[in-house]
Image (cartoon, rainbow, N blue to C red):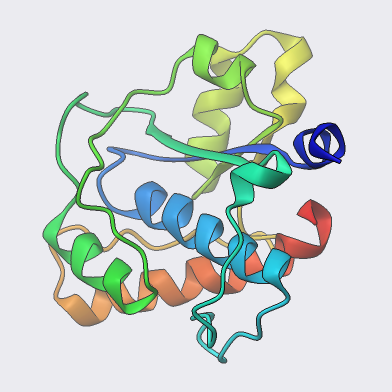
Length: 174
């Protein structure tokens, strides 16, 4: 059973520009929503889990990460993303930015860019055999807006966009 669980999951990454706003939110929210889905827990219309009973996605072979195409490694998560993440039961306090690298992407099954430019930047830097791992997070083809420097409401709007995209992708993951 442990081998089956470990083989069932995916290694999923998210990338934005600086890895301090959108991609850490996407990483944390994805982990939370997958944990809730694996536990069979219902979600509210904004994606927050209604139940406190969660599974550890790692028990099912899921791994999540995030990185930035122009990140300053070690930079902390933005205050807005830190605050909004708490609304979804996600703690980003320990997150520090990391830069997208060939090594990191080779370890992933899929990496989602938050905008078309992130996808193009990654795909253009990868060898042809890895380019199909890079996809836009929004299955409908829209970019996720950048909240950096905006008020908390802008961060909440961005988080809601991320939740909707991740919920749309859950069926592909689980």
